[in-house]
Amino acid sequence: MSSQRDNVQQENDPKQSVPEEEPEVAGAGPAAGEGGDAEARLAELEALAEERRDQALRAQAELENQRRRFERELESAHKFAIERFAAELLNVADSLEMGLEAARKADSGGSIVEGTELTLKALHQAFEKFGIEAEDPTGQHFDPERHQAMTTQESSEHPPNTVLMTMQKGYLLHGRVLRPAMVIVSRTPSGGLNESA
Image (cartoon, rainbow, N blue to C red; front, side, top):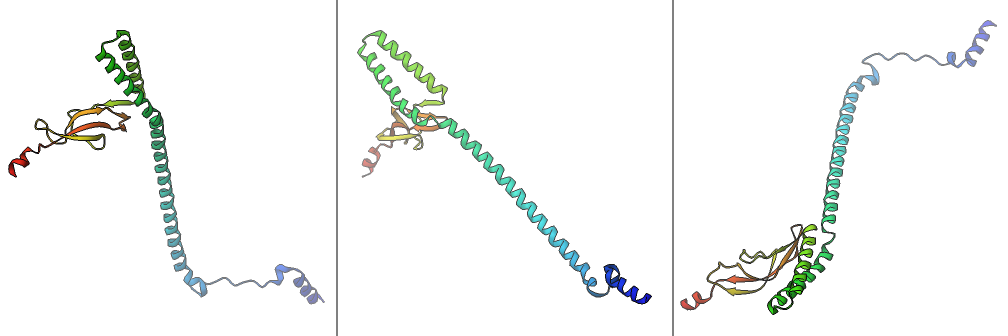
């Protein structure tokens, strides 16, 4: 009877009913190959970690480059925001200068000349304040990036591609061409060609 009671107790007690597993012997069974697998897995994980680290560094560098690019574009936008407005004001400056020149030639009304000079001076001060500068390239080498050649003229006194005369001043906005200067450019006299013919 006591043996039956022991059997019933074992069936009701799950701890006692589960047979104990035998401990694995080192070097026997599937555990023998796990040392090499663990090393391979560790190497694989280290390579993955290094790859992720490189990706994170690249992403950080890209973000820094974008931030710098954005700052440059923002600075440029601030600098050149008035470009269209400034281009319109150039016509006002041209008209004032022509009116002043005509008044000086006609020698009429000193007060008109004086008032126009003061107005033009105030306009040029406003230009300076916002980074607009006039350019009169007479005597300089012709630069197609900054000058617009209206015509060429033979000249033995100047080297070829020299600005002989400025028909209309050019203007720069923070060093960038706002309007190219309209100029007459020198060229080599054709007399030398006729003599050889």
